[in-house]
Length: 400
Image (cartoon, rainbow, N blue to C red; front, side, top):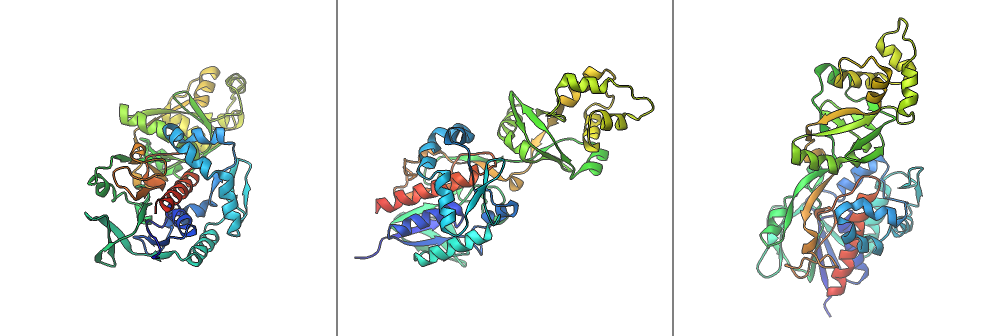
């Protein structure tokens, strides 16, 4: 009996996870990737320590996916954070949870984990073909692959698409597949930046003097949602984990209204009344900058930010304290999607059945960041990518 075959388009974590599940089920699997080497974005993520997942309970974990939470819940429950940690340990990379609850390999690197994974996939018979890009689908159900400049129809019993979103295109994900699926009648939502920075109209002095300066400690608030985190002043505006946590709401507000006002609490550990008391002390002959540094404990960048939004600082301690606790910062635009950590948009979730098969393309499955979901940083992105790959791979294997 001829061995059943599977094609995976995309050698990121979702595609490799789907390949592994299908190989374990006995399928002959070939993975195609348009880049010269696999999992480039995965390796880029590892430069910061490779945040695999998060250790918080699922009832706190799942709501991080916002509007997609209900749809993703059974998928993540099928391959939960605990299973992802076990998977990493099986590859010789045990994990640990940091004080924030984020989970990392003990080596704190992506490359050893990827090398071990690729070795295991090779031992399972998975073939990897690089510099091979999907060009489309023919009328007989075959995929058209451009392999080293030659367009070739490739036939497989099942196909899993794992081509990523549209952020960091130089690492392989450019969203170029969207029109191919639209031509097949699949609803693909427009891509938007997620976990992104924002433009702020800084003065030239502030931009040149403080670009690259961190704002911490910090609490950021927008439309009733507040997060504790850090931010980084950039030449164009503001980046950082605290900003990314609110980026979906901020992005949508800018899209609707043309701008959004983010409020920054520069002294999150001191309440406004206590801060006003500190600011009520006599300045004597101190400059305002020295006074704010000594009495309010503000760094130079924080003091400059206050002057940036309010050149004439309030003289009254209560008003000055209120400003320090809620600096209004007008965000004018998102940074380009090419620089975003991830992207929203992609294949509409209602185009997929429970096993992530495209309803309009029987035998073709989709997973990872090419689906229309988004999540904050903190391990949620990799967890959902790998869980959708796991579910798509299992469902594809069970179909043939």
